[in-house]
Image (cartoon, rainbow, N blue to C red; front, side, top):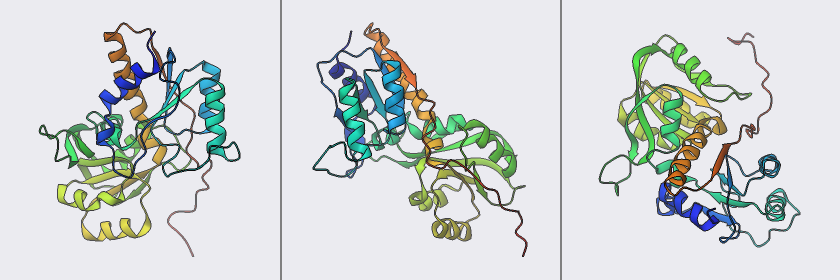
Length: 280
């Protein structure tokens, strides 16, 4: 049976902490490095419902994409939800490890999984990592559809390829416009608009697009925009990470079980449609 330190070593081989952004907080949050690990649960968010799932399944380690503590803290008291998460994990003997922007930059990583989920063949990173001599790592990905699709049809393909959320997929652009080359970025992606314009793609799929950057991007270049839920654009990575950790464990003959959480931790729980087009 591997120790937690052994499993963390394999996770850091897949997603080295050095690839994380300087502001990020990745790595082991809690857990005894000498504890044995038999079951690993992968999830996007380190929230209470995920901890409950981990306890019910008998997990020894939870790997999340989002950090629990992104900024410094002076207390882990169980007086807030983050402290309660820490207490419940420790009480159950479950470790927590985070792979965030280091998993975003990895190849394959978060955006590779997103591109694959919506039917794209990856051609390269959107923002290449200058330290990667092979030019495979970096933020976001550029991909191509096997055949051009009208924007409306591609949007439907995106919605079908991602886990369902209340918000669905918002679209900006002519629904009949042909789409072939697409940029994708898992999670919040409006900081990459300059790279998207330079890439000369037909569409950009990401999450958390804000009004002003999206409006300015639509005016600056004829790129269709697809805005899905943040959680939904990152969830496909969980299967990729579980698969790759399982493959490394098999090389060591470790009896390691992996599981991907299917609990929807997107914060939006309902959607009330408005009449469209708007009438006054």
